[in-house]
Image (cartoon, rainbow, N blue to C red):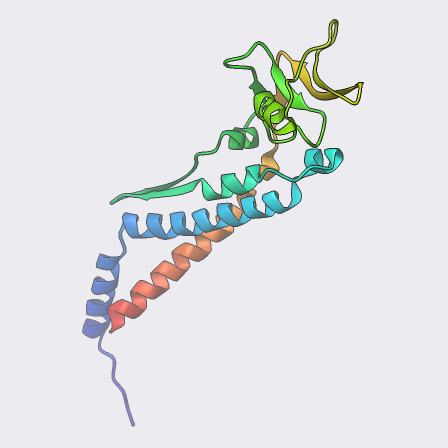
Length: 193
């Protein structure tokens, strides 16, 4: 048995394949892969970053799990973009200085009962108002005649840059390369039909 493949039939197949490969197709494939990579990475961060909650003996708030849910993809005709719309992700790129917006000071939790809550919310849960003892930079409650510090009061907090909050360049490049190859392969198979 002999099968002859003509250059003309291969050229027609090649033309159909090349016509299907657009910048938008490759960008969308890459962005899909990047979105999945970033979401998985932030889910892993969410499983491992609980130092403050553990130190206080508190339940984690799910802050980084929220970041994983805030990964968005927008695809266009010629490009695509992946964004993370979560306030904490800026730390992946630079130091972040946090200052109070509506209060005179930031309230940093010192107690498990305060963790993940604003002072007003903690006071409501405890059933008593928090107060600032004279000469201190804390908010506290009185429990059985003893002072229990709940929050430290600070003018600002600097959180240092943490590039590990996002996948490294090698992981991103690998995901994009695999996505492009998979998209090209899928389109080649479709063009061959």
